[in-house]
Image 1 (cartoon, rainbow, N blue to C red):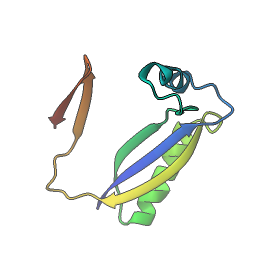
Image 2: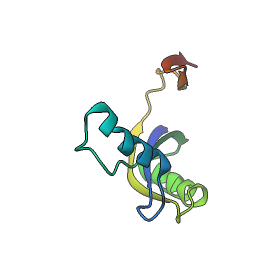
Image 3: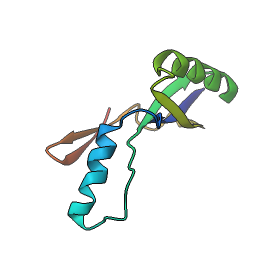
Image 4: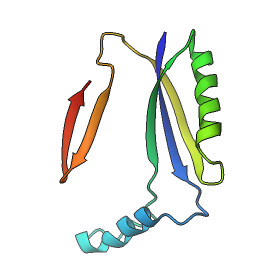
Length: 105
């Protein structure tokens, strides 16, 4: 069975977040001064071949431990869903000159 894992991570609060600081600072420029302390994280997805959801979770947990340095990232959410094999194998979003390009591979 294939499972799609969604992993949401944020930098630890003790670390400097230059992207978040830039976005926070620009809120005044667009007349939204009440928005502050913006933090920018990541949303990672991966497909996992596993016999069941518990096995998929175990594999993704191990990958996170080895890939995401504990001192830098805090995993805020992990979720899994069974993948429909009739859907495209990969979906790719590219950001080019402020326009999204959607590709199905």
